[in-house]
Image (tube, rainbow, N blue to C red; front, side):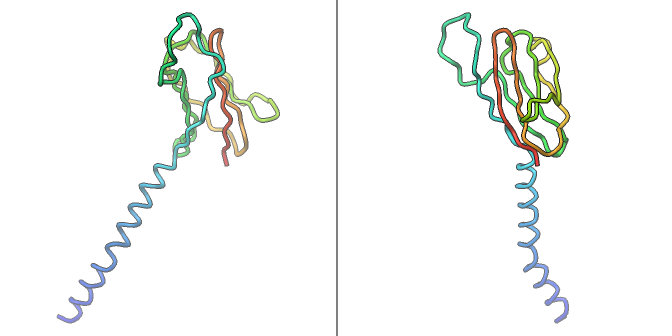
Length: 132
């Protein structure tokens, strides 16, 4: 009976440790993505209106899946999406019609500092990011 009591106490005392491990796993999963801040240098000027809260594009790195995701939130015609290293060498380059393809995945490059450029006739958005 005494051994059973000791085992029960040990299990009760160790339970918070398991809860903390679970919490740490949740935090780790939240850190598996990193947003790439895109500065919109040029936006379409056809219609005069206040700038909406939603950006034209968003991007983030998904470390678990091993790729960069680019989302076109508001179509702005044909866009070229490019990833270059800081020396200006092209790592990835694709041209899309933003009305037909609102989402692009890019293979994640090796460790380093890179620049994501999303450009078209009416739009230019750029952001630097680091992998490593």
